[in-house]
Image 1 (cartoon, helix red, strand yellow):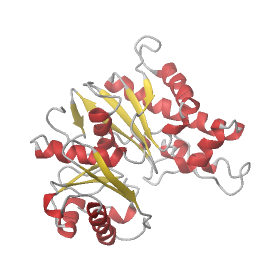
Image 2 (tube, rainbow, N blue to C red):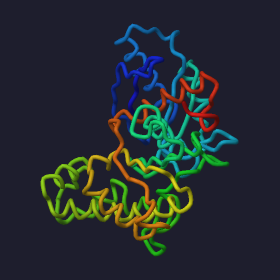
Image 3 (cartoon, helix red, strand yellow):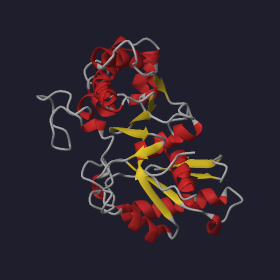
Amino acid sequence: MRAAVCNVAQELLVHDAVTVDDRIGPAETLRLTGELIDRLLGRTSFRREQVIGVGIAMPGPIQRRTGLNGRATTLKPWVSVNPHALATEILGLPVLVGNDANLAALAELTLGVARGLRDYAYVYTANGIGAGFVLDGALYVGANGTAGEIGHTTINEDGLVCECGGRGCLNTLANADAITQHLWQSHPGKPSIAEVIRLAHDGDAGCRRVLADAGRHIGVAMANMYNLLDPELIVLGGNLAPAGSILIDPLRESMARRAIHAGEAIPPVVAGALDGEVVVVVGAAAAVLRDSAGFPLGAGTVA
């Protein structure tokens, strides 16, 4: 769990993270969140009563009509929980809740490589793989809040069963766990995804291979996304972005083979400019400021 304090100029003042068991209940997680927020405020000149709002990022879809977390969230104790209502009660501060990929997309749009664009897609990799879409200058979250769940698009109909109940979802092939699982024989101890990327940059053939394979799988999903939405830029962020060209080059090749007008108008695919550790919390702060200015998340024009 990571928290940050930003000012109204969207400058990141302080941030920190604590390890939290993802099996504990939402109320306890939010209590720990409140403690972390208070500690961070104590490191600044700001007081609690000066807080405009708290942006909370959830790793999964949030139903627009009910405000409940959908079953595809990677935090299973939060399924069917209304994070806005619960966080407002426990934190005692104004709260805005959004999907993590959407908030990261807003961060890159506001401060990163997508500044000035009207149509772009941000692909965020963490425990799962999601996408945030900016269409005609506004975040698009869909009628039910599930837009961008590309980690649950089918890549292999006969593949492994995903936690969502489907078979062969992108998450079963290209998220961090799937990548590291492929190395259980050649790299005992199951290295972390950060270690896999480091070893790949140092020339480890096995690590380079599994990252390239993941890139090709993500490229299939991105080609379908491009054929539907035609973004002018695709930004890759999250824990796979540091792999750089090792993953992005095969991703682009896979995408180019399947995209409409391949070789003519295929959009650039680039790594995000913002640090993967803070991109989501910076986006959450941007969403709070945008909401306070009268442009709620998923509607209106992004400045």
